[in-house]
Length: 433
Image (cartoon, rainbow, N blue to C red; front, top):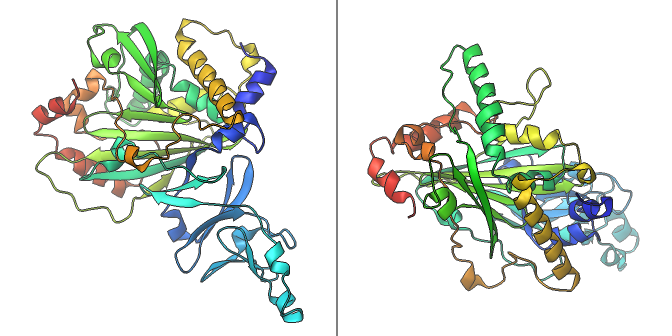
């Protein structure tokens, strides 16, 4: 059980809060690069701040305070010019640093005036990597975006799912330190949801991609990038991957899930204290001997969280997690919790967060702030594979984890997985010993 004060300390993300200052030491994915192909401006709320994302005509991407410093209109309705974003109200223009660079009428009246030099709004650096746009909102100099190993994978297909969830980011991340929920949320309740839907649609009732077994033991190991969760389930031992290798959750807000063919990163990017942008980067590797054309652009999809009746979608794996997180409330009341043995990973995560907040308060760099390019070429991570996922019959079939993908994208993904149908030996070999 936490005190109300400790709960606030862990969950608040605004400027000047302990949690907000910790989160501002990291790059956060907050949009897909292809979103700006649809419209060159987008309103953004990130870490409790209202911002506007834009791409000007020169291709420069900016992320600045959303409201014009002149008369406070919304710059997401502004006009991207050759070098900057122009306010539609009186023509003031800001560059990507937030500096005002034009004030048309002021400059007409006072050609030699320096008023614009005194006007500046917040502006944050943006980088594009792996088809996502990343923002850094902390003190200079900015660190590097961690180059986790899967981002170096080639000869595959990626797409990006983006969901806005009405809950605090920590509820999402605590789930990643809770092995036992897999057995019940996904393996019991979730399978029932999947089977009921399959039957209602006239399909087969046994197409669940994950059928976990009963947990016999769980364990947690801190490592340099976060926490590795481990499990022994019915029919396995500590010599199996689930314990020996484990499953990493990366500090502070990332879950990595991977097997020999498919993997994904789930980022729980805080919008504010009660809303989270859940950004998932998916990767599907082609089988040996198959060469795929390089993706020029990585497609994205917006993930709906409610069905046509207005209820939370329950039958897809990631949506089952969404149901659990969202129904805890906008910001879970941890004062009322009764934690048990299955919650040891959550307790460890909270301890880790408190320790890293103290490091930031003392002027240091917290965990996973990487500044040395030599250590950022390809950061290897442990991988976890469920036995059911090692079966080629399942690996070679695409199972939708999140709603919203187009049929064209699903077909492209299935085409990649089809290349593994005759490669059982490679699938087994790709699992680390």
